[in-house]
Length: 270
Image (cartoon, rainbow, N blue to C red; front, side, top):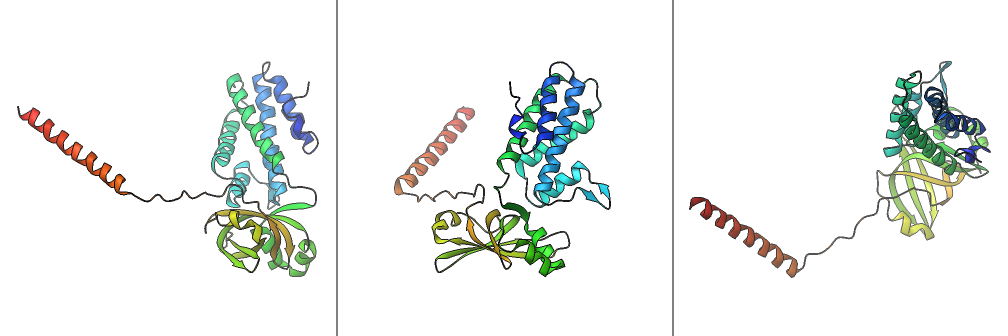
């Protein structure tokens, strides 16, 4: 019978194997189970970093999990609930990796959590011929060596991550979403993502300052022929106009409260 990590077998065989071992030890050896859960989580973080061109080493030394997760957060590859879950697992893993008294219930919960992260990793792998890269990485490469960067990226299908919406503008039959990103040295990088007019309903829902992901073809220093890939844009609720009936109901409520307060005061005096 296939294990719950079998879906990773083709793309991430090492994670799938460690996940299977964690399952096998779940009800027999808590410490061994915790060890393999830790390995699954470690490799999940590393594979996510590799997919987004994040170096696993700094000055020749392996970067810590905390450092890698913070880098993923800085580039807006993970955020919100998922980021909180990753730090929660990391902290628990550090405290209990070598703890013989690891609880079976803890292992059950952790195994579910790391599996949910692995499902997300598998779902968010780009299709053949596509690459995920942050604005910071691609624009930094152009800054270092424009010729080499142009040869590397020109005409390729890229999923661009880590950008904040600067503005949305319409030019003829296309829409341009301008994205900006600032690395640690405060250099501001801007990329324009060009969408067809058919994307207008979706593009009208995004707001300046919203983090945005787009997939398209890299041309020059812009992303062209983009498709909708912004995740879950915030939807604005339609405003509701007050009617005379609404105002009358509010007045009745206020009068009722005043009468009730007066009645209560009189009762207390009596």
